[in-house]
Length: 121
Ligand code: SF4
Image (cartoon, protein in one colour):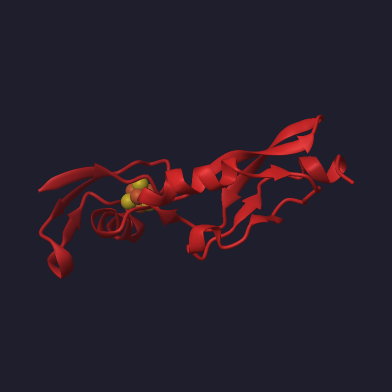
């Protein structure tokens, strides 16, 4: 049996997981999302990513960004490198795409703030 903490909501249930594959048994979860989380975590763990991207605007030198959907855990650092290679030179509204289909993952990096909308050209 292995134990892990569900990170889907702030309740943080401690999950006990037994078995493998289709026979995986999850207990300790307060809702179905915990069981889904445990299965995903033990087969193909995914994470969301919130960070900042550099801009060319002195008033807003960095802009908060996030991925539009969860990405494989092992792709977090490669996606960070792709984001770190960008310097935004045009304004973008919240939700605007900064990097489309980053690393071919089918996920975009989008603006998580409207800060540049008030600043940029
Ligand atoms: S199992 Fe459900 S209630 Fe418990 S932390 Fe996960 S999402 Fe929240």
